[in-house]
Image (cartoon, rainbow, N blue to C red; front, side, top):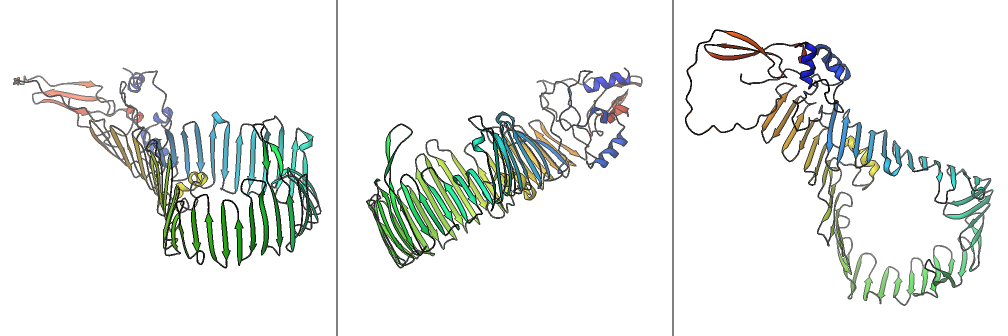
Length: 579
């Protein structure tokens, strides 16, 4: 057989399967071994990161992903079903999970795409710069001061906005009536911006006019003087000296075409913020009268409750929840009694309160704080020590018995278990406990200080651990466990058939199945027959090259011959195979 023929036979024939992602190109495997190692060193890949030997045809188990430690590691994700590649320590990552693709180069940029939702998201030096696109709508902002956005709305109107806050505001729309331009402080006209339906200004703050659905407000020398008018509203203020505003009771039709009451109010203030007089919910279900002289006197009366406050001493009667509460003085001493609430407080030493579905406790506040909400089907309990110093949150679905659990100890670790049993542990978490739930922090910055990561998924029966950005890593499945140390220099794989070890690419061999037991009964041993020495060349193990087998009066012996095709597979394997 020619060398070309042997090469095809070794690779499984001319129609060999395409190489896996992350495996060196076929042309690289044809380069002599010496130049392959030189090229690997120049690329920064460890010298023992030779091409992974392909398993013989017919082997049902998939070839393992390449693991070269922090330099390059490719693996199946455990916390969410998917595939991930990490390289250059904690800096580079490319992950595909459940229709979402994430690419990052920490701490500079991260990109997330979801083609099914037509979603694209970029963050550059978060929160410095961000870009979002959902379908045809998009938005770009830089430090929240420079903003650009555009796209089509549900009524097929196309808009484009440019904002340089708080100086320049501009919008161009396919509906010319929604166009606006504002240059502060000279002149401006805005639609649906700054919490107002419409805004106009000339030489602000000299004159600013704002509009809401029920009234229009003319401001002169903002915020000192304004006049407010509307179909049911009128008022004025000369801040901070005095002001008054009145709204009459009115009616409107709700979304189900029923007529409902819009309560009115009467508000006055004198020497803000020291004196207030308010009559709220006029014509409504719970009309309330408030009189406030800060900080000495407060009185609130309504059909639902009465509250009296005199110089930090207070008494409250709640006729709906049916309890009375006293504070003397607030917030240091207090207690409440009644069917709706039981509470005692000696702040900051100790406190306990229970009312309805809520329960809370504290000890040496804020050293220890405990809160619980029990409202079927939700049971939510949270314990905190020094606020974010230690945080333990548990949320249970009482209908199914499944629970979500999260524990955080700043700055050492953060751990959570989802409702379906998935778990994730991260060691060193200096920001996550403070800004809990910030997905951009987790994507862009958490990998930089995550010296230990552990994830498990009982549904997929997979667990994965990583130390020092994959310098040591382990992957556990139902029937096998794979471990790698120091850029893949030391690797082991344990299956039901046994354990294999590899040192610098040497000695890795497929574990053989258990030897079948011998047949019952004695087996006669034939006497060796002297045979003239002869030699023949056999293909032998595909990872070692041709074998020279010698047969003589002392039994068979085997020796491996060098061959050029060994450069196309991997470093020579250590083997103790018999003839």
